[in-house]
Image (cartoon, rainbow, N blue to C red; front, side, top):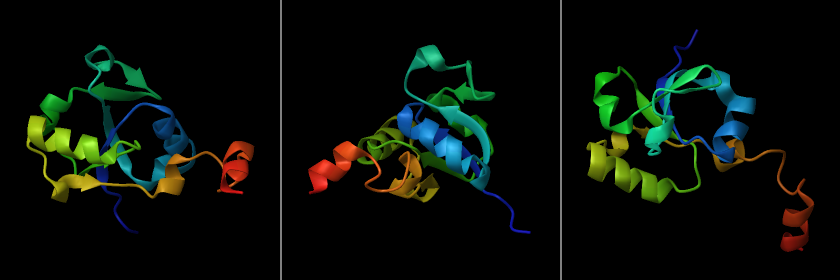
Length: 112
């Protein structure tokens, strides 16, 4: 049996909710983090929201960025917390969406 990667999930918005709904069991999630300090110490889906400035206190394999602002978050994690790309994991885009591609009528109309 393959050992699951220990991750801290970055992001708490709709992409996070969609990811957790469908892919929560892909990794061992040891925490969630976000820049919103008001969320630190609270729980979302029974998982603690951690302060990103304290991530060095935790034993994790990767930060899993579950947001569409990947470029910005990666830069912030490096600049603010000195976390390099080798510790960052990105889900596939479809894992953050709800439903299959073009199931959403607005997306389908736009594509046409």
